[in-house]
Amino acid sequence: MEVMERYIRSRGEAFLSRPNINAVGIGYKMVGGKRTDQLAVQFSVDSKVAVPESLDSEPIPETVSFEGVEFPTDVVQRSFKTDYQLVAAPQKDRRKQRLDPIVPGVSIGHRSATAGTLGAIVMDRQSGLPVMLSNWHVLHTPEGEIGDPVVQPGRYDDNRTDENVVGTLVRSHLGLAGDCAIASLDARHFDGTILDLGRAVNRIAKAELDDKVVKSGRTTGVTRGVVTRVSMVTQLNYGDGIVEKIGGFEISLDPNFRPPSDEISKGGDSGSAWMAIGADGKPSDIMIGLHFGGDAEDSDGEYALACQAHSVFEKLEIEPVPANATVQEVRAENVLATGYDPAFLGEELPLPTFTPTARKDLASLDEKAELRYCHFSVWLSRARRLPRMVAWNIDGATIQYLGRKGLDFVKDERGDLEDYQIGDELYAGNPFDRGHVARRADLCWGSDEEAARANRDSFYFTNMTPQHERFNQSKLKGLWGKLENAVFDEAEPDDLKVSLFAGPILASDDPHYTKPDEGLDVQVPTEFWKIVLFVDRGALALRGFILTQRDLVKKVVRAETLELDEFRWFQVPIADIGAKTGIRFPAVWNKLERLPAPQALGAGPAGARLIESDADFFA
Image 1 (cartoon, rainbow, N blue to C red):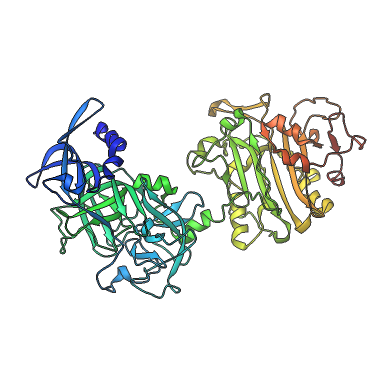
Image 2: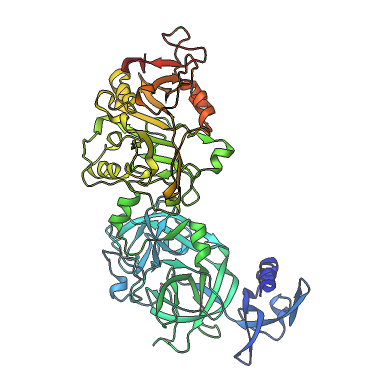
């Protein structure tokens, strides 16, 4: 079959250019109207004729050879059309009514289109939000564009489109990857359980020959089928001069479950999710296809067309919604977890990057190294299991003073992140405290919902680094946060807004703390860095600092006793921070940097300046 698949990828489009051929795929050869057990390259034609040349088409050979392998061909008379054009009078059953919560299997469409089917509620990987999945020709249409309103039910079922807007078109695709689109879910609650199937889309799989499947569509409701052709490429006319080749597979009626109408699909079923039938004979939670077309009236049987689910999900950058999630829960977990905002100070500044070695060490989630939380982002070292860099924003005008009652330090369990965090196993029976890199108090701003979420997010171990307990002794309490206090007290930033980057300096010679009985060996950082960005009288500015046991002016390395009175703040060039951390700061940052003057009190030859009081931070 693999050779056949490569043959279709290589030659399929050439065959579709012939006037009478409308589809090509792999299926079982038909003889005398009955299926044989022999696989063949199967061609669909609009009509069979004795003399193909009369249709200006070359005859299809009985066998073809490719890569040294010979296999048979088969010709079947079938023609296809898209399934969104409706012909029957609307029936006001539940599938065609306005619903809240909205569920898959019901009428939906572009505001100016007729109606199709909402196939599934899925998660947009770009935004982390729940979105609605259907076809390009249902949600986008030839006349539409990104951002257009989407209505539920579709206009054919209820022409009060202004009242029925449920979201807007987010992304779409029409081509070999499929006929597919997603729309935002803005104005309704949702239940991802597909109507009359009792299952939501929790997994996806690739369709194979003889797979048994079921769909729930706007027009024909629940129908069952069997996959009869795979690796298909079908050419369809979408109107307005749009003719596209769509990849996917073919489904025929399951003879053991014939619907009353004997129709596997009709107009309005486009966008339905084809779900795999489980071993128990019931619908599973596995989606294998997205319905996009049905057979024409003069075809030799009942057939439907579907895009491969895995191809659609990859192209649209979507994934299944977590089981039993509600729109409120999804939004609480994703809408607020937008991370660090690079345009927070009015001008969008590029993020720092990393040296190749540091970049390879970063943990990732969904192939992205930036781990986003409410008001802050983390870049996590896999080897050290500590944050390499944390970035956050502070809106001093909307700070809320929240307690920490009921909040525990926890590991972030998304993906495989748990493997790259040090938890409570480090902090028992020793002088180390869990030190927030982004201070909890700095993150609690904005709406009540935002502040509460940021307060909770601040306790993830991805935002923690071990700090000696004497950081919190009364006479020197808040040493790590002195800089944030000083920027508001001394620098007086415009609009009381500040952005910060910080983290431990993960040096190769950091001392080890071990618990042999528990197999614990952690290198404890002895230096920390912080960069503050702010707007001063309309101009962006930044300064870099290091909190260290080392005397950066006299260049004397003190004994690494981890005692608090050895730690002091120094202002340093951000280039020095980059050299120590493997972080590359953008060139534009250098233009914003305010370095101490060489003659400044306490300035050393390398531009480091000892901070002896809060007033010195921004002197």
